[in-house]
Image 1 (cartoon, rainbow, N blue to C red):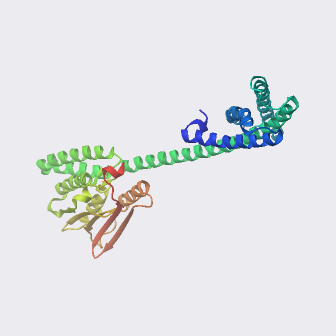
Image 2: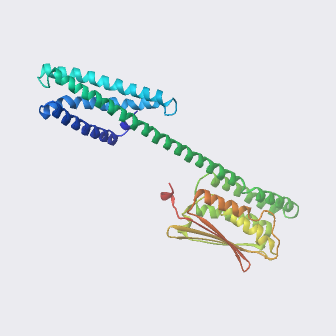
Image 3: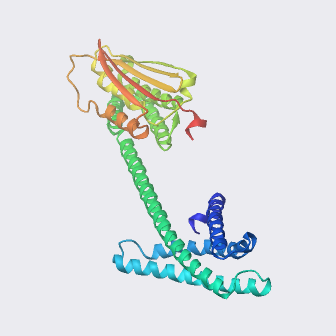
Length: 356
């Protein structure tokens, strides 16, 4: 379908444009061959309406003759030929309509006057069709630009989704290896703890897979997953790992990317609490302030403990994910002060009704 016929408003605007052209033609013919305006309008009106739709055929002429696809002279000759054919067909139709009006209703000038009018209509028809060709080339250029922009956007979305999938696959491997090693060590010394850890690990992995398959999840579910992870670590480290969670109900209803908090608490245990003989408390805070959601994870750490391999990978993963999902509207702040390591996430506060 022609783009101008794709919507009612476009059709109305197009017809209004040609109504103005018809009015100008009527005024021109009244000056050329003196007659009443109604008589000139009866002659010009139907012809203008017909030619309005004839000029739409310029779209297919332009599509079949791309700019740059042929030499300028050959392209110009092809387009001029199309304009000549259209103007000629219009003049032939006008001659028949003028003869019919003259014979049946006595409307219109004599034979010489009709010939003069047909000559004027031929020139005007050629110019109008040439203008239609130019307009349709502009329409095609605009459509091509929009198509290119759409393809670029689709490629960016595909790249973003591929990056997110790659980032998600990096979340659990080392944690899973550590858990399996702990289970192996516990089997000989504390079979009950090993069994409990297997159950917790199975629940954690099942829940994380379910959450990871969704684009956004309520923060309450994400925090529950983080607590399951910490329950596993409490089996490994015993009373050395303590958990303190404080979150507002309004914050827990907000939607966040899945598997966002778990890497933070994993980092808190692996690079903070686990490096202290006395252990420590992993604190999780979540609150909503207007249109902003703030998530804080902090833990004590030993400044004298040398950095362990992998320090910063989990944090970098989280930072890249929020930059990919919420470019320009989310940030992550990391600080170390007085033996406390603190990570603060700030995201747009969105609930189910908004996020769709």
